[in-house]
Image 1 (cartoon, rainbow over the protein chains, first blue to last red):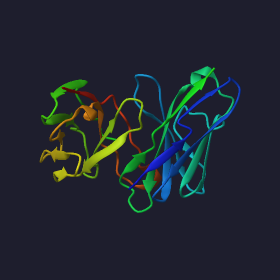
Image 2: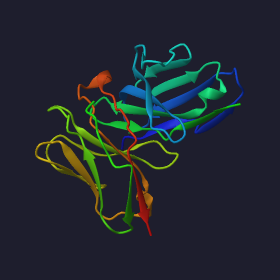
Image 3: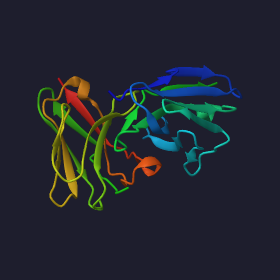
Length: 116
Length: 113
C-alpha cells in the first residue's frame, strides 16, 4: 500500500514555457502533500507543503508565483513551473501523508525536468 | 528538527548485515527517528521509524539507545539492491502540515559482491 505516482517521469521543455507535474496517491487519500527539488549530487530540498482545498505553504526562498501548486482533491496535487528557465532544471519529487496516519511520508518516483 | 549526524559512506559485503549509525543527541521527547533511503535517480523510500522502542519490519530493524541520542538501522542481509543513500531524520512531530522532513547528506551505503 501507500503508492504515490508522478507524471511525467521526465520532461524536456524550451525556456519560457510552463510545465505541469502531477502527483497522485493511488491507494490512499492524502490530506497533505509535499513538493521537493533535488539538484545533482545534492539532497532533497522542501519547496512547499500543500493541503487539500487550501493554499500551499512555501518554504523561504521559493517563489510561489513561479511554482504554482494546486491540491484540488485528496489524491492529486500538481506543480506547475511557470516560465521555466535552465536553472529550474532539476529532479522534482512529491510525497504524501495519508489521512489515516500522519506519521509517514510516502514519496513518488520523481520527475526529471530539463529546460533548454 | 533535531540535527542528525551520519557517516558519509559505508561499505558492506553482500549477504552480511549492514549497520548504519545515526547520532541525534539534541532530539526531544516527542521527535521520532525516521529512516528513508534513496536509490539513484529514484524518489526516497520509507524504511522504518521509531520513538524509543526498537522496531522491526520486513525491511530492517531500528535500534534506539535508551537515552535516544543515537540509533542504528540494521539491514540483516544486505543485497546489491540495497546500495543507496540512507537518510536518518528526526522531524518535529507535530502532525499535519507542520510535519516536515529535512534531508541531510545521508550515508551512501555500497553493497559489494
